[in-house]
Length: 176
Image: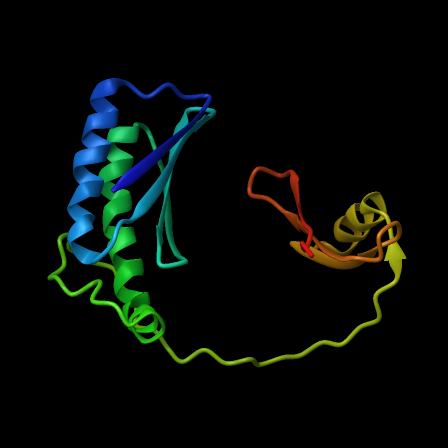
């Protein structure tokens, strides 16, 4: 497994990197081909956040955990990843026609909720008026929503402004 480590306001020791490599390599047995993992370790305030994204056959599996230490977070994030793998196993198998995800579960997940069938229960139609990002920020504040879809006044591209967990904003722009 190829592991890319991204550190933000956190410096990972060689010991932590070794443990991370060993524990993530246990997930190799679920995949037929090479898998790449991107691990982000960031420290915000007193909490360390560990985010792991696995990329396999053009699909992503992602889990994130915050806690006191990165060592504890590794043990918490692995069951979440395995739950995601099980959840998407049939979708990946149908689309990729591969032999991935066939082994027994490595980590026990105690709190797996029963999943109900998801459906679209509401549709909205609205006219997009051209505006700047600053105007969209004012609109999202005024409405109290967590995201806002708008048409950029300069480029006429459809963009999405969203409120991040840290209180800042994120902007999603489509590529041609």
